[in-house]
Length: 56
Image (cartoon, rainbow, N blue to C red):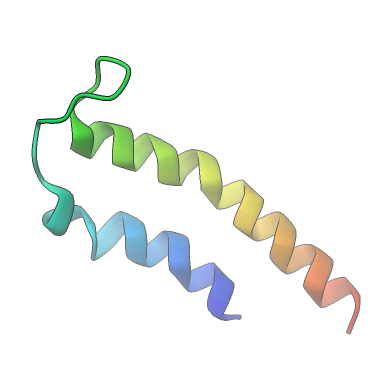
């Protein structure tokens, strides 16, 4: 499913695009905050996929 590709792409392809230190988010450099955000969002995407696949 296409939804499963979004976190993978954001953690691999988009990282060079957001490779900067400023702005800091909660004291973390932007790139680290970006990675933490997508690591935390990945289970939400997987849950959505689970719910959508269950209806089929």
